[in-house]
Length: 186
Image (cartoon, rainbow, N blue to C red; front, side):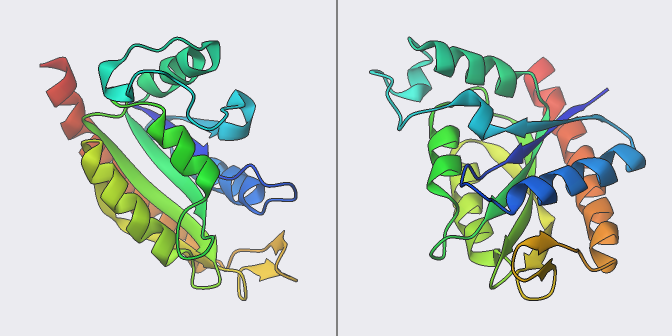
């Protein structure tokens, strides 16, 4: 069975992303079709990239990098839950992504974003990063508005239509993850 990480891409105190990621995980688990795991980058306590060699060399020396690499390597696909900060993704998520290289290769990704413009610009940013990491990103995405999907900009109350959008994203993600797995397993 395919393994999908739902990656919570914010470490900010009081972050909205935790409720969003848990919701995505709940929707995915009800839908089925894969093993879904919520992965919080905060749990890995990754400082700003501190490895002496480039990630593409795979010569990890730090325990936090080795733990992060093992976790990411175990998945076939990813759903990145990202805020939008200043027209981009969070620095914490970009840093976590930049720690690794081969562990991301030939896998699939989808995006659930939130922000004043639904997080669309954060996803545009991430799509460029995914291409460099040889990750196939799916077209469907879920964009959540701080104005319409959060009460007082902090209490997550997604509009009902978003659950269907998550389902569409997951359908595409699982199809692509299965296809990409053949690249990794020969």
